[in-house]
Amino acid sequence: MDNSVFNKEKILNILKGILEDDQIVNINNFSQEILIDIIPPNPTHKAKTELSNKIIELLRSGYSSDFNYKIDFKPIPKNIESDQLKNLSNIKNIIAISSAKGGVGKSTITSNIAVTLCNMGFKVGILDADIYGPSMHIMFDLVGRKPLAVDVNGKSKMKPLESFGIKVLSIGFFTKMDQAVIWRGPMATKALNQLIFDAEWGDLDFMLIDLPPGTGDIHLSIMQKISVNGAVVVSTPQIVALADARKGVSMYRQENINIPILGIVENMSYYIPDSKTQEKHYIFGKDGAKNMALDFDIPFLGEVPILQGLREAGDVGRPGALQEDDNVRQIFSEMTKKLVQFLLERNKNLPPTEILKIKTMAGCS
Image (cartoon, rainbow, N blue to C red; front, side, top):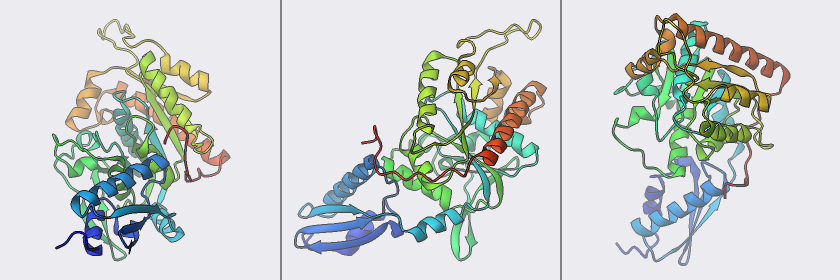
């Protein structure tokens, strides 16, 4: 076939590799220029630029370089927004667990808060939004498992897997343990949208979102798609970690984001090498996150020490708050009670968080 001849079906097949069917609005051909109207999965300027470049690159290499391509982005139709939000109407509270720095223990904190909430009698789900480095499938002993499809009002939905009473969805269910996820921003956002909206979460009191490091596309996409009740920021007491954690706090306090921060958790606070003396060794510094909470006038939820049992529990797929160690259970029980208290105060005193409407943001172009 002559690739210089307009072939709408071939273009559609290429676009469906990175876009959903309902995101492709129209394809028109005017002489040697092909105009493509799409609804972007992420409306930020940076994400749209990357997506436009990716589409043009794919079309030129997979279809034809003889055409000029123009991508026009359309606003999300109100009916699509309404349908998506209806899918989450049975979730009472959505809490983001985050830190702008990697390796500080967000996933450990998320998993242990989740099982503690469950033990308190709440229905809990976890969305593992760390697309490039998922870990919830490991921490809940779900490696090798895949969600089943269920029919919901004539639509096929993913059914989250359950472990220790927690509903879990993660990109880790769809990749091999040693397989790197090498996706550009738009493809990662597309996968995240599927985990959020193409899932049958059912009734939940809490959804905890385990966010990736940074303050980028994934964070903005979540805040643009769903109403987050509040955020928890995790950091170690180390100055380097705190520098990034401060950026995470600043992101939530941006005027056009404005998500309440329910508290700060200090992970890896200290180490006790001798159980007899109980002497604390402050390996990464002392009270760093606690002092940051004071600086920002944010509640401090508590300290989590360096505990071998807590690390081992995550590695074997049974969160530490479920173990027989009373110390671990007590730490997360007190932390979670504070979190619920601050959430109740937030819900009583503040209106629901508005879904983020982004045109452009400083630093995102």
